[in-house]
Image (cartoon, rainbow, N blue to C red; front, top):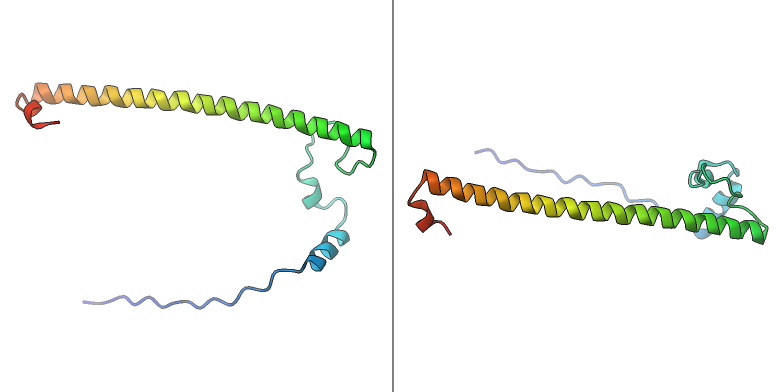
Length: 117
């Protein structure tokens, strides 16, 4: 009998995480069009940029974000309701299938109903 011996691989140690100062220096040195800063900005919202300094513009931005949140939340609730309905439908189909199986067993095996629970 051959035994397979697994050799444990020794991984190099992880580097230390960056300090707060290093992170801030990296963020300050990044250009404003860096994908990290622009990836989350929605292109379909025609409101002001996320860097708006004017309080009124910032209020409009918060309003647009709130509207987007409410719309997405509503979509998630509707999706949850659809999933719940489909789950109930699958449970009903499962019960019908079990009932049909028990009927087939009764017809195919006349003595099976005394032994099955």
